Image: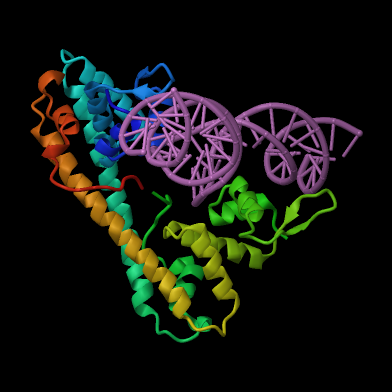
Length: 142
Length: 142
DNA sequence: CCTACAAGCTTCAGTGGGTAGAGGTTCAAG
DNA sequence: CTTGAACCTCTACCCACTGAAGCTTGTAGG
């Protein structure tokens, strides 16, 4: 029987995160001691490890929920899991493409800066004038 | 005098987002009509355009705050703005590197899947067993 | 058996960067 | 003067956690 702290250490998760996963139903409610502390089995550790590894690969929690579901029923065909992974791969590829466009523009900005005063700073100029932009980037973030 | 809707259309921003920027002090409070509606000048439009373009390049709002500050004082040396841009470039590069590692692992997972049932699904197997992982990725997301 | 104290517990609030909706008011055209 | 699109404020929600306040439990040493 493992305490939540042991689970946290062995999976590289914060204690609060484990409780959060339980709260949102990603992990089942574990057994408790008489005093109300959580105690976990090795199976529950495996499940958490699965979740963490999936998160490290960038899967959103909803996708992980589906993957857990699939992992619980070994008779289902694998195509569903494969589809989720492919979707994730596509999203990663999209993000890479977007970030590479940003990198190009940022490099241009930074390299053209002549280091004088802000009045004719290349960085600020580019930010001010969108028309100097090489790329379209309608979406932002992440 | 421009309405908030015109500003939104001309900068590709949602109306709510403009009000949000005002609320967090990124944009100054504009003038109002007798009835309480916001009215903007072209200068204010320029400022918003600057913010939006910076966001599209992935700058966080705090960095944009600094950049706006610098843009307001043309006598300051440009190095500060350059530093912010360089920091942003570094972060973009880091994210690209991380995402490329993810892409490699996801590709491996997806390509090795034989399409049978979940019991021996390669995707789920990799997620279950972290030791099959080629890369370290301690940080997740974005 | 008693005491320390690390580690557990619950609950609430905050992060970034917005977005959505309810419910009400104002502006401008016809 | 009426209509209706666009405006207003306010609140709550998104993701995936993280931190802290204030309290209780478990365990090791004496």
